[in-house]
Image (tube, rainbow, N blue to C red; front, side):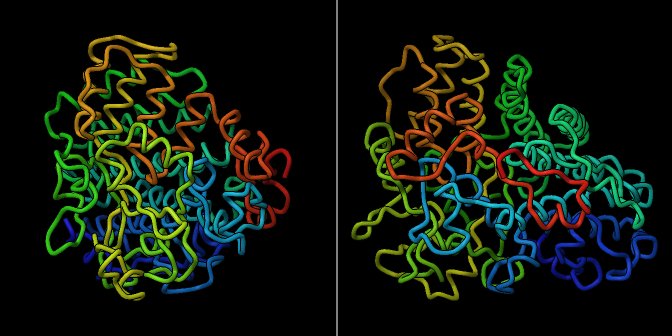
Length: 487
């Protein structure tokens, strides 16, 4: 499926919009070819749709060191999620990237600002496609609209869990509208919009692609939405997970390593394995289409520019020893005194013997895996458990056992507790930016992170479960956009 990114690159000169912070929510018209002139054919709409995926992908930070003015997409997501858990930390305490694992993020943090603005860039571009959907050929309109709504929902689901109430923008914002982009909307209303978008996406998509929106991707994200809401819809989540299972379109890879390193010539291609449901695509060797996070998960002496951004905490090492099975050696490795992530080594290199050069490491083609089948199976267990302390339901046991069997842990399981499920999700999905959201969803984030922070002297308190609204956005709003409590 690599061809879709080459198409994006080919049209970039005529489509991609300015990424200045002030323009993320709605680019100033004179910075681009106007939408009226550009969206004239089905091909134009399709190119615009590919631009929405491009906004999710973001730009490798090797292209521009100014993180306040460049859309990084999901490439900083590990900082906002994994680093704010007991899984990983930055190797250094210097710079704004090191603030996340110490719970010192403030409203001026440039990585948080970039992520917030990047997700609104996705939303703007999706809204733009929906505004001009009638320009597309009749037979393509439903699918294009479904993809745009999936991507809009995907971005809002990220934002609402990290920042809580955020502005709900579902139409292109007029240049003279100084309020809509800055009025915070209650979480409940945002979830209502997310659910509606995903339901429409399910109705309009099939399972023919993994690097574009699919029916199963929309079903899986909606299942997680149902489990995340204040009043979870366990029945709905279970049905969605079972629909994915019963589709027969996905299966666990027999070798855990193949989930992350499958394809040809060591270039990872999510479409080459049976487990990935939705992935954000990257291409190696092209800074406009590659990613740099793989390199930064390891030490600067090997492929990164920095000191290492996903150093594995000892308590996670202990959980791997207890429950990781075959996943352990494929998830992290130890260099000296440092435990470092190897799930996403640039191009699948064996970094212990043949480290890629700095440049090659920073131009990695490893795709970002947003949703995979193992996650769906474990959500299936969670939905069946329905908030209870444990379950012995046969369907839940089967899903749980399948994930453990693949890890070489074949001893039969007769019941599953909440703690066991959370542990299984931790070792199965480590470093995939799920842990923070899992702790929130299971209702243990405050207790787990308080204990973890106390051990290391970090500055955690319950208010820091939410990130601050970026000060740059508050300043642009002229005070309309309010701040989260405690910041």
